[in-house]
Image (cartoon, rainbow, N blue to C red; front, side):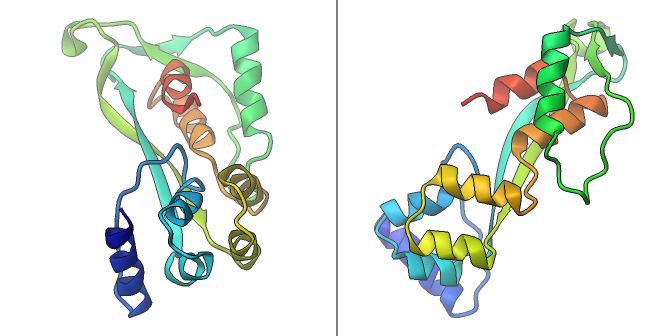
Length: 176
């Protein structure tokens, strides 16, 4: 609500570190959401440093993990999503995916525990200019990617390649 958002903004403006939650589909979506809550864009720009978005994926059971042969179309979709990774992010030398075949340790599910996938939206000067003009979340996200943001989907795919979760889980939790 407006009162809570206004109180958080004013606390941030007086030097306090403010951590809060806000329900949006992605990190960039938090900015228009604050503006929709009647927080003026100049106050958003002055009080928000970054926004972290997260989702939980099921973690592959280490006891029964094995390499998974996936369809070429699904592999191509993953490779396409990784095409515009920032230069400072290490690209995988080999792209293969995994799954849990199911065992007593995971009650036959192939999963045991959860792992987070994330994206971090940092307000750079160009993004602040866009916020001042009330740009949409989609426009802000596109510029953030150009600036080097790793999307939640990309982070999930990288974790699937590392064998931490499945590509199926990444698609499930990042679908729009």
